[in-house]
Length: 420
Image (tube, rainbow, N blue to C red; front, top):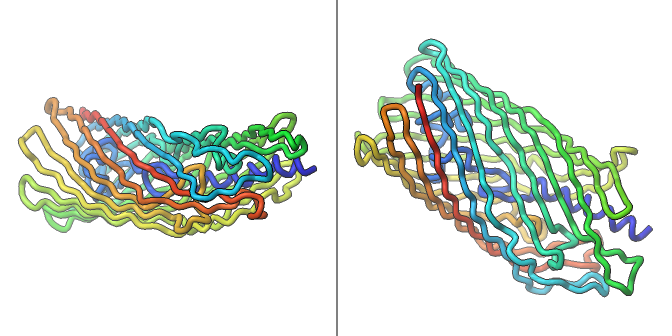
């Protein structure tokens, strides 16, 4: 019976991944929804409206594109380093404490595709496809925190059909439907106490998926020929991630309720001169709407886990600039501060620790012809130090993981734009 109870623990701990996982934006969100914005740290993205990727950031921005069809395809390469330093973790019973887990980061490609078309002079239709949430983290099987999480991979792909309507020369509105395909693969090591004094660990896996729906709204105000403001809102998406918790000789149908957070953003685009443009944004994310993760048995409906997360709402602030160096070359630069929803060491997870971060970015847009351009961007994301003091089991005397995480990320982006 004790072994069975321990085999259930990864289900509880796996739930933390869905809301503790961190990509490049705070929490487990992916900021990199195009390649162009990476060059100015996505500052003012909801007001930029320079290519078809405005479908994600503010669908009303489609009315600022020239009549016809616009296509943008982007790729971001995330190069992330994630390492752990032990500062006094306790072992579980007589099991080996373990090691620092190696390099848990790696390379992650982040693609995105957008298409928009005009319907007369005032209406636009569009479609965006991009991964809005996701991460992959892998520690060694001998990691100190292996009982809290060893391998974590999630991916949420968003299909975003959208429309926009120009109400007047100064006001445009837009809206979109979000169809989210969510997949997760979570693995942990579990001590088999029935075999003591032999210190044997087995790996448990939980895989699940679901499809959820939401919406996004946007409005663009033009205050003058040189200044515009974008306001956007993206709704929550409710998911019921059904899957199986499996271990050697054990399979448990399980379900985890998950609510992807809502966001709201205010952005400014201002032309200081014919060549210089300033960008700024303030973005709020409703992480505080997710107080706990509740895992239930699909067979009986019994609650298998109810874990408090301690998340709080977070803000992001971005400042950027664009400089039209020549008629064909535009230079980009930007800075952003992204606040984490995790505020203390007890709530931080080994699956991927989250912390506040700063972006420094540079990039450019080069016209290849009258209807084709390319964006290139690079950003360095600096993460603040992240401490952890998290209990592995409900009884903290059994094991506590204590230490610190050092995270660093580089993002290289490329985007091709075409108008026909």
